[in-house]
Length: 265
Image 1 (cartoon, rainbow, N blue to C red):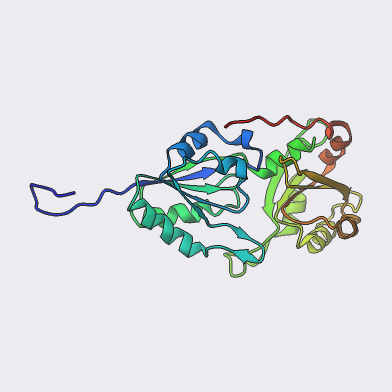
Image 2: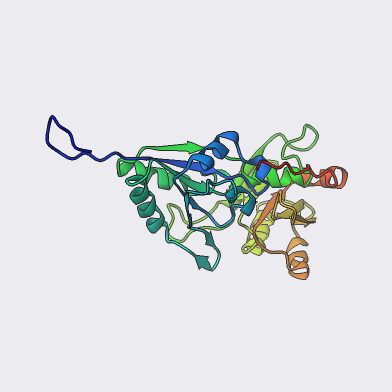
């Protein structure tokens, strides 16, 4: 826009919203997230965002798949950030739509840092994280007065070259009565072995919840010493959440009480 006082050209910069899409069930998308999807000029989304949530995006909006899955990357992380910056300089409302919650193992903090450094206005819209929702839909409360008064969340997929060499599974085993592991199926053998070496009994219950909160949700219940063999027999893969601890016993009582889906279209 031409500034008549200074004779210079100034550029209006849009805003990026890091929106958590939730774990899969479209009814778990926040109202604020829905409003932003309906108003967005551009939506850059991840692989695990459900088609039902993408259907909310306004017809005029540009939709870009930036999904990352094991063995398949649509865009590298730096390319995604560069794309967000470019789109914000050309459009008023840019939504970065991420599965679950942007700040829980979603690299939302990294993207926000880069946007701030580039002078791009940015806001986070939290979402329901799969580590809470998937166990809930499987009838596994993460805390319960009779079983657990503490819970810890940890990633089972460690990035090479990260700020520390690896997860301290010994400390994790001693820190909480319920352990929730994201992205841990591929490394499940090592994780369970390290937890048992750290003192957890081989009989400790563990649940894997795959495609949590979706119509395709599957559950596999075992113990630390039997889960790896059970996974191999059942061909139980990602994306899955693991829950470790005595709260898993409640699955036998509450596991058939699946929440009903809610349409938000």
